[in-house]
Image (tube, rainbow over all chains, first blue to last red; front, side):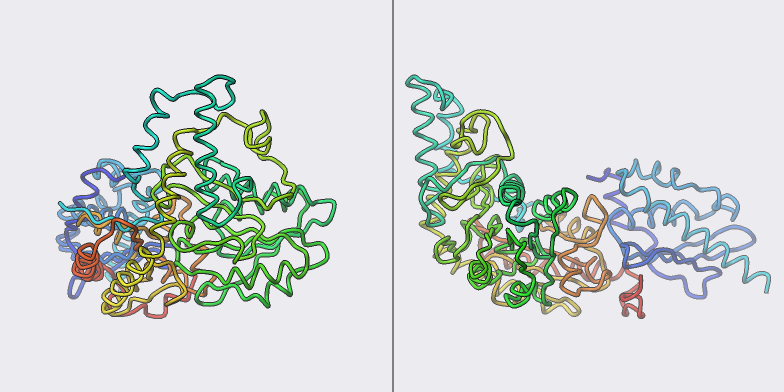
Length: 123
Length: 393
């Protein structure tokens, strides 16, 4: 059974969707193993001003996606990169042990979105 | 919130009549059936009465029924007990790929102990082909075990034909009838099986009581050694109240099974029709050769546990065979062996109905299910299609 916070973010997920003309997109996971998260971000200066997600996965995966997109809004890229899987799980009031990998997936998808943004900047 | 229980394959509610029958044995009639005085005699008589009722449910003599504590125990007992009793005759056993873990894991135990195990493939409906079984049997084969009806996809195997193949070769045949006994007509004589597992809580009885039918005169190595309970084949003080409850539930099931099956088949077909109106949803298992109250699907682009949780929030309780909803985080071996891709198997959802299910339950599920699917597809990155990803990995 999930915490109340996980259930809230699962039943009423925040930031569902895809940003039009995103500054960075990250996707992590594989549908054959269970979960896929796609996170798109909008960046101004070095701050994330908006984040949205689309997720194929279980209740925990959807709650993690909702929570991480909430957490990164207004954060600098470096601050966002420092968010650990444990931070996400803690914000959600804990995740069952076998679902902790969902929070890893969340932080990985976010990291890839930021890397995507940075590689676009270099071009 | 009203609740709509569609998870009878997990367990069924205890019948009121079974509870009533059990109560005296949880209270004043607490005697040990082995005790040589009045209270013991009463408990012993209660067990023997239950044995007659359970035997009657599957059309056998009471002496063929051994009470156990669970369907899993009955399956372990059958596989290990029958194979080990015959290891001087041969060390090959045959099971299907769609067996319950309580068949597959003891089969793996036997493999580690020097047995060879054949795992028979199934077709896209989950059916085992008797000709495939015929080819798998060798002079070393001592036991075949094929599930009667799949709890996951509802498919009913052609046990009569399969058992006949085993019989031709003089090989023992066990069937795991845990999901079927009490829910469809199950007659050991007609099916021609030598061993059969059944479990009380699958047909309105309590948890903690189950049975293994063993053909008369057949030797079986016990799983639990100790005293002389169950003619020395299963030691341990009997769970008298649970066994009495199983007996009463079996008696009720025997008298109601025909009508129930007819009613549930209609409800099932209506549910299947309603659910399949949602695009990109597929029935799993056989369309007609399936358990009366059983409707199972795979839903594209979304995951089963998420469906299960969102349906539960609406008071609809279902099961899923998705990786995320399993503690082992592995996709359902049953669906994979039927050729369902790993991604599609993630969208597994299983509705199972029983005696107390109503037409209103079906109406509610048909009305609410599409909303849940739409909502989860809005969240899914694959709403527009798999993009070729479903076959990878």
